[in-house]
Image (cartoon, rainbow, N blue to C red; front, top):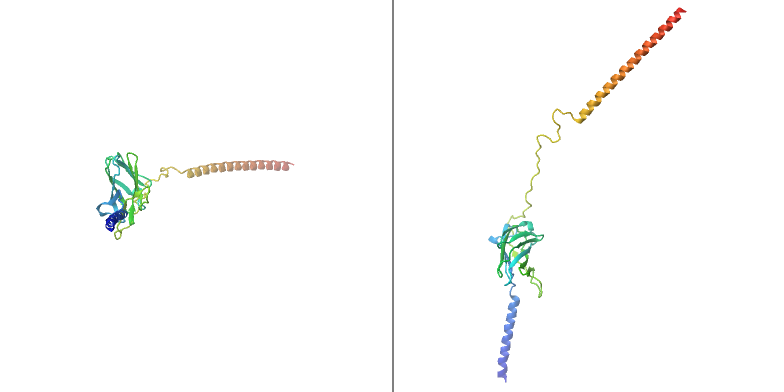
Length: 249
């Protein structure tokens, strides 16, 4: 009886062991990110300038092609810091409020979406997540937006992350671009200067007023003198007449 039980027990133990190993491998195997990013030319260095980032969005559909990739930029990179370098034929780049999109005609079903952008300067960080929404021609959307392994039943998958090396010695953040200096040159002829030999309004008004005052003063003086002379003449005649009458008496 014992000879019959031992083989069965051994088979059961073997089955349990195989299942345990398979479960262990399933739990420890790293999740495969289906959108990957890497810096070309070893440029994955904090504060590095003009770095080209290559993205590879793997297709997960056998029936529809990728039509759009929408990226949310990490902290430290603004949409204005990104310029489009290359991508699928017919695709175009467009900046958004939080990042950018690259989109165009659907590529062949099952074909990966590969494109590249150039970053003006990478921020001083250890890692940069590029959350991505991957849209297909049939309306399907893959959400590569999680920073940690999502729980069972989650609506997203791991986002592509670019790991950065420490900045080079002396590297500094790039300041804003140069702006035009204000013009300080003085024009040869001021716009408000009057034409040559033209009296100013103030001078003209003063001269005219002074002339009219002089004419009025002269006229008044002549009238006063005439009245005084007439009074003297009249008074003298009256005096002589009176004097003459007194002598006759």
